[in-house]
Length: 345
Image 1: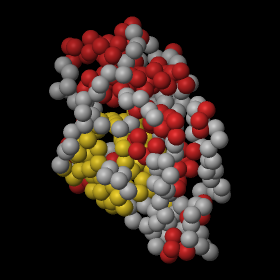
Image 2: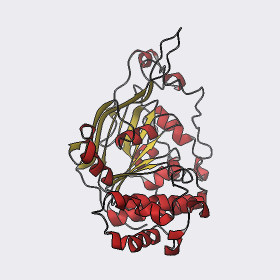
Image 3: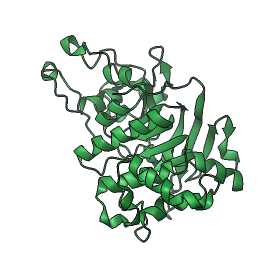
Image 4: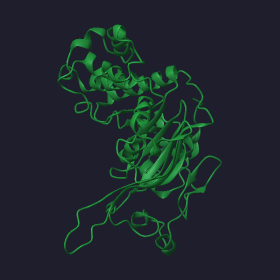
């Protein structure tokens, strides 16, 4: 794989204490409790870096990504982009920021207007931000973008229904790139695609990052994809961050039991790992309107004790780069013995 630009030390995006709660309908005999979709998460994203957000469905990943872009308004917390708190801007200033903060949606079938040609879809951002591209060069620039994402220039006059799922996702990527963004939120961009097409789109995203230095907030439930693409990973459970650190460290030596269970659920084509005992989660994910006291994972955790129910564990350093929220962190690496000797890549 080609080398990518090194991520800078200064965060391009800094999220602190982000919250998003959704009100529920009140019933005459019961007080409505809010759904705590995102409940106080914090993270940094640097230029040329890819940060993965992982967790089970309903943990708040997509809500966090949309709140960062203010597609939905956050309830609390700060979102600093390039040193500016974007939760305090509105109107024309917010519109200017939207040029540099883009999103690739999960569903390539629903995210494109079926009544617009590919050229109209890709060039639409230039109608709003005319300083990006002069009108006389729109056709050539749109064709260049299509070729950049692996499509033919003569596809510009076609409509979305004439393309496959993978091709539609490439159109969505081209539309995001038309804004020349510095940050792209990738909201499960390959989950609706076939495995072979997934690899093509992932490699495309890597090539784009290498060439432009764009930063990705990559939301996914597929840990294999996250391990291949992301520099760092943040694990979420019921709206909270339970572990964050460099991808290799988190995957090879997870310290939170939930992270360990997620990794153990991923099939590994390694004969040395066949006899290893794997953690299998039992029980259902609690209702986000009525989260357990203390540690939210304790109702499914094999290590839970009375202390876990009394107080929520804080995020604590486990190594020089990894933090997790657990009173009884994991200490045994996932990979041990011969399989732990990995080639440098």
